[in-house]
Amino acid sequence: MRIAPSALALATGLLAIAPLSHAGISGRGLQWEFVRFGPLNGPSPVPGDAWYTFDLYFTAGSASAQISGMNMGITSITPYFLATDGTVFNHPFGGDGPPNPVFLPAFPALEFDTYLALGDTLPAFVGGSVDLSGNGGMLRGAWFTQPPIELLANERLRILRVTVGDDTTFLGGSGSQLEVNFVGFEQVFSIPPVQSVPTPGGALALGLASLVAARRRRG
Image (cartoon, rainbow, N blue to C red):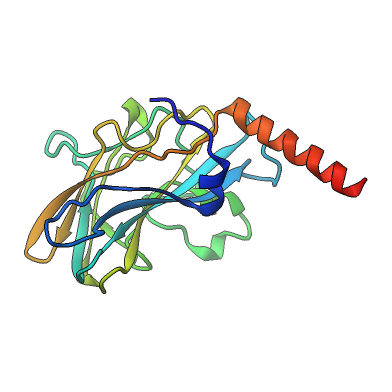
């Protein structure tokens, strides 16, 4: 599936919502949000040096939820994964979890590292489960926290950040699944595809159009 350009979707940031996955609880599922587009060390989007950053959220829906962890696949044990055919960005000073804000002034691109999260809580990881390289077209990992995180109805929780290069044609979909560990039970959700990553040519066209418009306004 080729991802079609959509400037409107990028502007709104709300990209895709997974179908209802639990009877009687409306709105519960996974949701992508666009973060940024551009080179990692500068403001100008130039094809070949541009990256797309997205956050994935779990939304509690119409009922509250207690979450203890996420399972996006443990190699040879569970089949879950996040699919992509693009180049995944992993900062050399990054890790499996969110970066330490102390290091961001010195290494600003670290903010856009690919990592797993549980809101503002620093998660723990199942040993040997995490592979965020994108090798084989899959990102995997299992991460958790104790005590559980309590979400109110319609509250959402950021569970991962991923940055992919402008060679990407799909992120999510293609059988992507993630198991949410609630207190007392587990539930598997499909990870929806991001629907609006511009192709490199499309991104260049958008950039040129912006330059032309700016010149006309100055004229």
